[in-house]
Each structure stands twice: as C-alpha cells, then as structure tokens.
Length: 155
Image 1 (cartoon, helix red, strand yellow):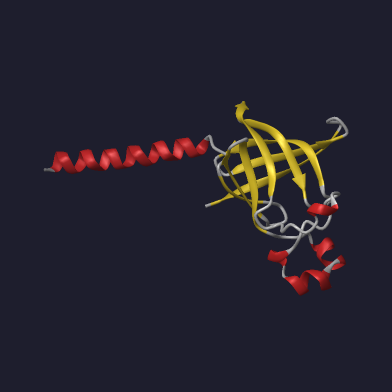
Image 2 (cartoon, rainbow, N blue to C red; image 1 turned 90 degrees about the vertical axis):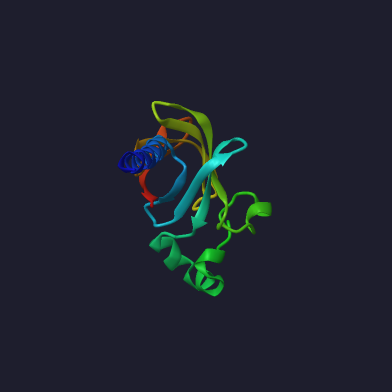
C-alpha cells in the first residue's frame, strides 16, 4: 500500500513538473505591462495573439483626457488614437494588440505590435526572458528606432 501511495505521489509531482516546464518555455498567459495593463497571450489561428484583458492608461494621458475617461470609465475606453476613423469606436478591452509567429528562434517570437497610445502598428517581437518575464520590443522606421519594456507574468 505504501508503494502505491508513493507511486501516485511521484506521478502527481511528475505531471506538475512537466506542466511547469511546458509553461517555462511558453508566452501563453496573462502579463502585466509597465503601465499596469494586463495582456493575455494565447495561441490563435495566425500564431499567438495578445489581447488587452485589463485597460490602464499612462498618468500623463489620463490627465490630458481625464473628463472623457472618467465619464465612460477606464475599462470602457475606445481606440481613440487609431489612424483609421472607422476603428476609433472599438473598445480597448479585448483588443488584439499582438500578432506573433508560432515559431520562436531562441525563445524570441516575431510579429506585429499595435500601440493604442498612438494608433500605430509596429514590427515587433517578444523574447521570453524566463518563466515570469518577457521583453516586448517594437520598432519603427525599418527597425532603426526601437523601444522595449519588460512584462511580468500574472500568476
């Protein structure tokens, strides 16, 4: 009976260590950005997609648009800065802002990043730094000017 209990315990531990190992090499999950937005990354039909699952706005942008944001509520904010007037009425919550290839080279996933703060899409990549951190980089002007930030996994 002790053997059976030890065997079941070993299988239990092994199955969770396999899950942790799979997650360690995965960008799937919900990530906290520098401005405290939540971005949920998951597989989609075009690779990996990242959706805004909690909206946050930089303090400077909030102060500039305080009355309008307070009137509708931050989680009801729209894609106001989109260059396409037909898309300015879509909500930020649930908006797909990342489109990444499923193939990774050295845990770097390439694709495109939409920035709702300026309404532009950039060539970008996400690098899995470790199980709990990814580095997002977006580049403009044919990759000459780039900006990066670290996101943290939300458990």
